[in-house]
Structures are given as C-alpha cells and as structure tokens.
Image 1 (cartoon, rainbow, N blue to C red):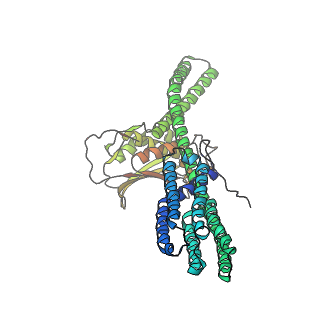
Image 2: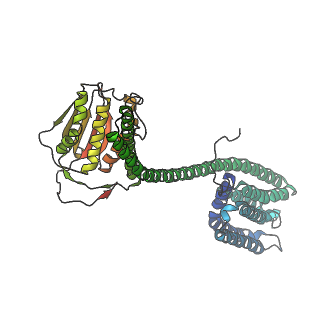
Image 3: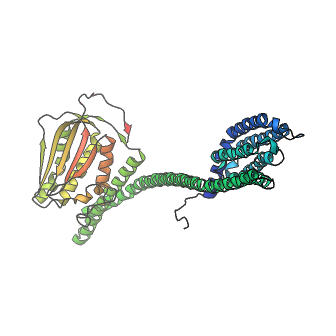
Length: 465
C-alpha cells in the first residue's frame, strides 16, 4: 500500500528520501570510530590466535596490514565527510563510499577462509567459521541502518568463505558451508526487517521536523501579516479621521444654515453617519495600537466607584430618553486600584453602551463593584448586567473575538464587533481578564482587575501593552 501521509517540503530543502538517506549515512559515520577500534582489536586477536596454525608460507601480518589500510581509509572518508559543507545535500555520494568500504572490509575478513585457510590437520577451520559469523553478528548493530552496506559486507565476507569450504572434502567442510549459508540468509532477512523499521522511524522523524518547520513558517507569516494589517489599519484610521471631521463640520454647518426641512434632514443623517464612522475609525485605531503594542498605559491608583459613576453620568440623556434605569451597587469599602483611567473608562463605556443598546425600553442596567480575596490575590470585580436579549452559552467566548457578534444581536442594533475585543485587550494589559457569564435574563459581563493591598500613589512610568 503506498504511503498516503502528506509531506511538507520547502523549495530549497532536500526531499524526504534524501533526508532519510542522509540520516542513515550520519548514523553509520558516527559508528566508524567504534567499528574501526573493534575491527583492529579483533584482527590483532585473530593474528595472535591463528598465526601458529597457518600453512607454511602464510603470514597473517600481511592480512592485518590490509585490514589496517582499509580502517585508515574509513577514518579518512569520515574526516572528509565531516568537512563537506554539502554532505547533507548529497548523501548518495557518501553512501556509495560506505558501501564500497563495507565491501573491502568484508573481502579482507573473507580472505581468512580463502587465502589464509588453516590446514585441515590443525582442526581450526570451524573456529575460523565461528569467528566470521561472530563478526557478522557484530556488524548487525553498527551497519544495519544502511542496509546496502550491511548486505554488501555480509556477502563479501561469507560468500567467499562458504564457497571455499564447499570445495573442501569432508563432512566438516560441508557442514560449515551449510552453516555459513544459513547464517547469511538469516542475517540478510533479519537485517532487512530491522532496516525497514529504522527507515520508517527516520521517515516519521523527518516528516515531524518538516511539519514543525512548516508550522513555524506559517506562524511567522501570520504574525507578519497581522502586523502589516494592524499597521495598515492604524495608518488608514489616521488618514480617514481628518476628512471625516471635515464632513461632520460641513454637515453641521449646513444643518444650522439650511431653512429647507428636507435638506436639513439629509444633512443631519450625514452628520450622524459620519459620527458613527468616526467612532468605528477610533475603534480600529485603538485595536491596531493594542495589537502592535504602541498604546501606552499610565497606571495610577484610582477610585473605581468614582470612575464608574462619572462614565455612567455620560449616558444620562440617553437613559432618560428610553426610560432605562442604571443602578450602581458597590461594596462598603473599595480600595484604590492601579489602572489607566482613560482606558478603563473606555472599557466601562463600551459595556454600558452595549447594555443600553440591547436593553428594552424601561429596562434596568446594574453595575456591581466588589473586592474579592482569592488564590490570585485581591481583585476588583466589576459586573454589568442588563435585561436584553442576552448571549447564548455557546457564544460566551466568541463574542470577544474581533468582528464577531452574538447571533442574537448580529442583525439588531448595529455594531461591528470591535468593542468587546478592545475591552479584552485593555483589561489584559492591566493584568486582568474579562468574560461573559451565563445569565437567564439578559447579558452578564464580568471584569477582573488586580487590586493589590499596598499601592504607591507616586506617578508610574508608562508601560506598553
């Protein structure tokens, strides 16, 4: 079954197969020093053990010299690989070196059972066959990651030895031949399975790294796009506010000087629409400043009750016009709270405006202030409750997202869904949080602000959001 997992590749990165091959080459190169040391120690022991029983004219010192030369070449290739700045981009080239060196090393070991075969009288041919099988088993750990090198090494070592034993007379030679062939097949099959499992693991690691890089790239792109969007909104808000003020000024001038009732009505609508658009531009500007961290906060100890009463007084004419009552209930003793007066006033103003907008005529809006001691220390709790359409429980969090409105108010009294998003940014900059709570009759929003026990009255430096 073909692999259907998605792959994520950048234009300048190697393919997954090349990265897997590079990981295999790296694993094999990391094992070179230990393989060389193990090979030379085993070769020295072999020379010491088998030299007394070699046929006349056979000297294992020449065999050891060949093994030493191959080991030096292997170390040299590893050194060149480490100094190659493009090694990770051409792993196939270095894999060929690994396969070639594996073949040379296998042939040198196989020479023990071909060129340097002990005499039949010595009785040590079975010991030599056992040595070759032991070396084969040791190679499983060090070279099975790159299966081609592993297979070439085994074939180069055991096939010549098996052929050499096959042409010798006697039952012992035939038994050794069968044993070597069976052992070769067993190692090739087992090594293939182990190599495939290792390759699947490497593929998974490579894909995870690529997905992580792609996710990081997407995150950085999104951050850059968001920063560009915020900068655009901030620039456009600045640019549009000036002509909007001019539109409002000329509309107001026309209202005061025009004697035609119909034309005056048109001009009043222009002035009202321009005022609403100016408020929207102000919200966009505030949101852009908050997102880019350019809005400064001047944190000073303030009386929260006085602040709430001052903002509530601004809505007096509107409340009387629709006969909506606004009640403020506060705890007996409220401490001064460190906050930016103008920004927190903007939060309170948005909450009251929302409550008023969705409240029925002759409705009731309540604002409750209290101080709570909890695990996070002492906090000021401000709750605004109305008797309007309310917020569905599955939208209590989404209403704070930018340009998102409750499904119950989306087509009602207007708004573009920026007020609560700005409130959350401002409250978060103060180290607090704002949330909507479940409520059966109308909406209930809660603002939590830190209210530490000891507050210094000295002016504090401005901090960025």
